[in-house]
Each structure stands twice: as C-alpha cells, then as structure tokens.
Image 1 (cartoon, one colour):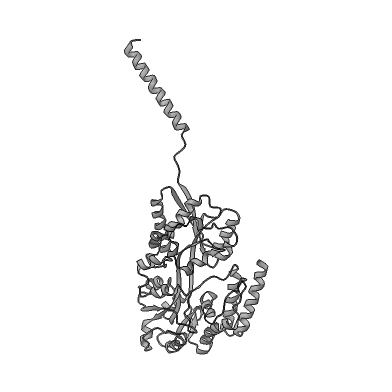
Image 2: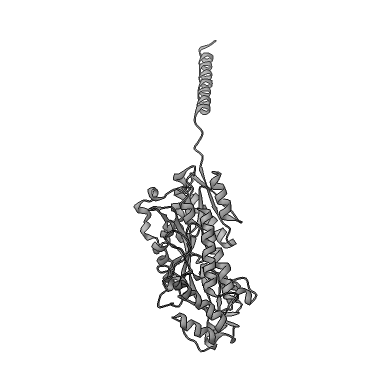
Length: 417
C-alpha cells in the first residue's frame, strides 16, 4: 500500500471512529429538557370570556416557553367534580375557587399555602383587602382573587324621565318611593328583585344582623336580620311595586330590566356587556345601592386561583398563578370590562374608578359583604332561599320562615361536621 493510500485509509478510519464516538454520545446524552405541563381547570364562561382567557394563556406560554398550560373546562357540577378529583389525587394543579366554597377547601388541607411563594415584587398589598381576606385561613393565604363584581343599582333613564325623576335614589326609603312612581308607567314594576341570600345578605347586615355566627352556624333569623329582609317583603306584598323574574316571564334580573319589565334592578358588573349587546337601544345608568339604615351596603363576588397541594411542579404552578394575578396578566384579563380587576393599580390604570357605568361597582368593594357563609354553604343557602321565597309569597310569616330555615340549616350542618 502506497503512503498516499495508507494516509487516506487512516483518514477514513479516523472519520469512522469520530462518527462512532459521536453516535455513542448521542445515545448516552440525556434528552433535551421538555416543557413542564401545568393543568388548569375552571368552569365554562361565555365564548368571549373563553377566548380572552386563551389569549392570556398564550401570552403566558410565549413568555414562559418551558411551561405549557393544559386548560380544561369543567362545564357541569364543578365543585362536585373537583372534590372527587382532590380525594382521588387527580385534581388539576391550578384551579378556580369561588369565595363561597373556599372556607371548606381551605380547612381540608388540600390546597397549597401561597405565602412562601409571594415575594415583595409581587406586591400583595396592591390587592383589594376585602377580596383577599376571603382566601385567608389560619394566617395563610390560599388563593389570589382574579376578578370580582359587586352589585349596583341599574336604572332606566327613559323611565326616570317619564316619572320626573332626575337622580338615582340615595336611600332605600326613597327607592321604595321611586318604585311606586315608576310602577305602571313605562314599566310594569319599579324594581326587579332576586329573593336569594346572595342578594339579600347585605340587607341583613344593615341592621346589625349576621348570616353565620363564629361557630359557622346559621344565625340570620335574629330580630336585627329580619328588619332588613322585611323591607323586601313589604315592598313586594304591600307596595306591589317590585317583581321577581317569574312574575314577568324572564330568566334573570338583567333580562327583566333589559326587556323593560322593571325600571330598576340591582345587578352585577356582568350585566353591563349583556345589556349593551342584547338591548342596544336601552338607555340606562348605574349607581351605588341606596343606603339602608344609614349604612352603605352591597355584595361582592370573587373567584381566586388556587394551587393543588398535590401539584406535580409547584414552582411552575406558581409561575402561572403569579402571571394570571400579576399586574400585566390581570390588565389583559380585565381590560375588556366584563370583569373588574382585584388589583387597585390595574383598576386605576384602566380607569374603571372614573367609568360612568363601572365606578359604582369599584366604589362598593371596600364596604361590600363578601359572598361567603362558612364551611357548609349549601345547607345555609338552600334553606334560606326555600323559606324566604315562601315568606315573600305570603305563605308564612317572615319570622317563622327564617327560624325554620335557620333550624333546618343548623341540623344539617351538625350531620356534616
């Protein structure tokens, strides 16, 4: 073999050896790191809401390429499905939790406390305190509220003009007087009502009553609590200037107002886009709920993102929660106006505190009654609602109805503890 051929042979052998070594390295090298998947669950909203959430999640993934979000909508029996999955250790890593259901889950040691993850840069103090406290339990924070709505008074501007009314009523006594003037004019009734505890709790508190006591038992049948509820019954039975949805053949308070069956209604922020889209010709305005017993009052409904204590990658789960409830993520989520931001700085940046329709909702958040009634809300809510509607329809006296509701609720709670 000539020197040239021998040299070529050595080069070939060397090349083969290098290829072999490289192949071995490829086989033995660890695979490229794959993205972590965080499972997120919530209940179904409207199409606009679903699309908006997906956009926010897409933005999160673009900024966090190492984390993928698998979003699942639990469209039916949300809490029942979630509780079953938590017991079976098959729950999502991050999920929606309504303030109403929070006390029970926080007490069951199935949620991850978030205190250790929250840094000064996250600016926890930016959240509305009245919203954050709904997700605190035994000095720990278990959830960060993603949005909220209070209740405000909606009134038909054309109906007000026809009745010679210029401004919204500042007190409940004036609201009743307004209702009588408005009934039978452009609208069949002055005020639309929803006889559920979720809409009546602030009236109970206006006279010093309470929904549950320190032990978590129902206590809404006190004389103080009955005073607030009596206002609703008297207006419905004596004045005949208010109506509930079934009286006028509608499915909700927003609908009976939109169809001009009633001139006023007390509803949440969610009614604004609904009314604008469904009843574009309706001229309406909003105001804070009239004072009762010289006390300002409303309800506040809020939902938080919480972390499953069994989450597979808690650091990634926190990254998702902190983005969704951080200033940038929250601004994207609430920028369209169908939900209100729980961060004060975001509300100010979006101008909701100056918005003619939304400012009453923002103003009410500090004095609102959180929609939360202890660890066993089903027993309290169901018994109240069933008995209160009976009293409203005149089937039994109010006090008898509420005492019955309270006793039955507390008997049920005893069997659950």
